[in-house]
Length: 371
Image 1 (cartoon, one colour):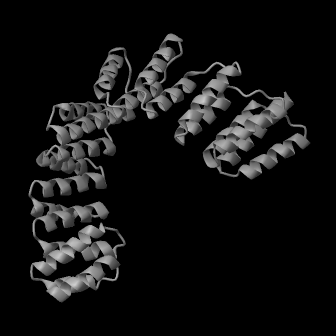
Image 2: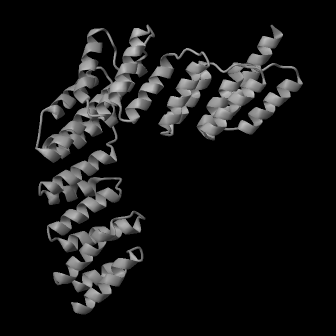
C-alpha cells in the first residue's frame, strides 16, 4: 500500500514538473525515487513520453520506449497514442501510421483515441475514403465513438471537399440524439462558406452560404455561436458580394458584446472597395481601432486602381510608421501614379519616409527626373 501511494505521489510530482516544462527536474525526481526505492510504472513513462513529444520532439518521446524496455515495463496503448498524436501534429503522417502498425505488432489493442488520430492522419493525407473506412471500423468494433470522433470526421470531410456528406452525417447524428459542440458548427459553417467562395471563383453564386447562415442561426439558438463563426459568415457574405448583409451582421456582432474580429472588418473594407464603395470603405477604415497590413493594402490597392493616388499616399505613411509591411509593388505603384498624374511634390514627400522601401526610393529618383 505504501509503495502504491509512493509511486502515485511520484507520478503527480513528475506530471507537475512536465507541465511546467521542467523535464530535467522530472528526470532527477525519477532518479531520486529509484534511490529511495520508489518504483516507477507505465504512468511515469507515459507522462514523460507526452512531455517530450510536446516540448522536445517525437524522437525524444520515442526514445523513452527503449528506457521502458530496460526497466522491464511494457508500453501500453496510451504510450503509443501520445507518439501517434505527436507525429500527426507535426505532419509526420507516415511515421504515425508506422507507429500504429508497431502498436498492433506488440499485441496492443487500439482504443477509440488511436482510431481518432489514425482517421485524422488519413484526412491530412487527402485520403477521405480510407478515413471513412476507419470511422466505420470504430462503429463495427463496438468502440464508443466520442464527440471528438464525429468532429474529426466532419472536419476532415469538409476540408477534403465533402461538406455535403459532413452535413448529412451531422443531421443523421442529430436525429439519433447527438448534441453538437460549438466546434462542430464551426467546422460545418466554415466548410459551407468555402464551397460558396470556390463556386464564386468558378461560376458564380450557389445556395451553400444560406445553409451556412442557417447553421449559424441554429447554433446561436443553442447558445453556441462564437466570434469565429460569426466572422466566417461575414467573410462569406463579403466574398459573395452581399456587403449590406455583412455590415448588418458586423453591427449586430458589436451590439451583443462581441469584439469584432479583424478579419471581419478587413473583409468588409475589401468588399466595399470591390463593389466601388471606396468612400464607405474609408469610413469603415477610420472607425477601426486595430488595423493590419491587409487593411492598408486593400485600401491602397483599390485607391490606386481608382486613380486616387493622393488619397493612397496619405494612407501609406501611417502604415509604414506603425511598422507594418505593405507590398513593395503597391508602394511603387502609388509613387509612380503621383508622378505621372502631376503630383511630383507629393511623391517626393512620400519618398522621404524613412520606412519606405529602398527599391521604391531608387526608382522614384529616376521618375522624378523625368517629371
